[in-house]
Image (cartoon, rainbow, N blue to C red):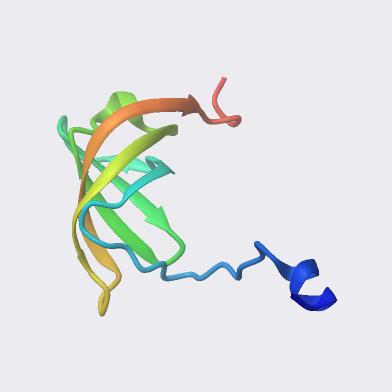
Length: 91
């Protein structure tokens, strides 16, 4: 491996429209909840509706399993698994 290759090993660029696949497990913050059973997550320009993420999960870091994803529209659905952290902005 070249010196430049070693230097950049592990680096990657962030994308505003990440590619997700069914079954992927990701950790994200729930931005809002419009009902008692669904939360909305935004990752860049990507929007996921998360089943089971109600109002109590808003502004919390949660683990979600992707259940469907349309790469052309950057939208999908996920299943809430668990709360894994708090936002540093909440008091």
